[in-house]
Amino acid sequence: MTLEFLAPDSATPFNGASPELRSPIEWAHRERGAELADRGGWRVVKGYGATSRESAACRGTVGLADLSFIGKLELQGTPLDVAAIVASLADGAVLEPGRAAFDDGVWWCPLTAGRVLALTEPETTPTLRERLTAAVGDADRFASMHELTTALGSNAVVGPLARETFARATALDMRPAEFGEAAFAPVSVARTAGMILRQGGDRFLHLFGAGFADYVWTVFTDAARSLGGRTVGTEALGAILDDGGRVHA
Image (cartoon, rainbow, N blue to C red; front, side, top):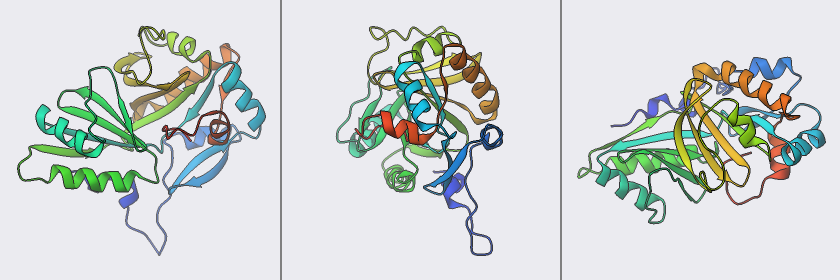
């Protein structure tokens, strides 16, 4: 079975126009003077009018960005079926507990042996959804795909003080020796269930229930500012992050 009818990009057009997809806290960004732009049908925060300062924060302290637009699709099934599907779609990737795999623009994040969260850019979310739908539809498999794009919020926390920012909200040991490249952990953050993915270097993705978006944004905004950091938009992230296909801006 699938729940692809929950896909935000599948909304029925009204009067010839498709509804715009928005962050659950777009209002908060607007209040802070955010410049919005379109990306893959989503309204995203391009910046707050100071791209150079935003980029400097990401390089020197810490930058916080709302990436609600990232596609989030959960694969569930028997461990053998889930492993087979991931391997077939991710160039033979074998998932390990606590470690995500990256292939062709998609992060495959293991929650359990029978549950994997796939993260992708908004432009390619529909394609990945189709591929997963076809894979779980195999009559010999017991698996399902669940659309979680709008059910989960997602923020990027980037910069040399990113770990210190998280340290003010979680007990997870995020030192490089303990939380290496591609590390992934379902963990409590700010007393809220969440997940943290280390995409590489000082780049982290924090996922959480969308209903807590305003609360999480406030907690991390306060923490980042106390460390000399700030909120940033996708333009600044694009200026400082490598183009290795990572899920960012």
